[in-house]
Image (cartoon, rainbow, N blue to C red; front, side, top):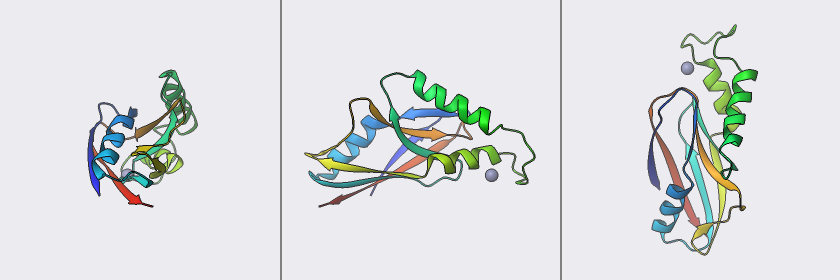
Length: 131
Ligand code: ZN
């Protein structure tokens, strides 16, 4: 298993980690198999979406914040319930098909770390399984 350190700079932020995930897969030496990218945090997630046009992830964070406001009639006392909800919506892992030592991604796809309660120092775990 490999770990990527991600330092986020604002409360809500999507960070393109595609190149770092590709590096980790290359370092694993596995040519064909499955890769799991896992975020072990309760207020952050991971998703695959368009990386070509940066306005797409801006629209995702805009709409998530509109649907799930920071302040609302939440019961959780930490004041970050919106971050927990957004993290669950995005999910804590993505699966990758690895072929020829690289993840198979569509032309426009990228892998994004999704920060919802930053800025923080975060980590992303990557497990590569040959097969
Ligand atoms: Zn909390």
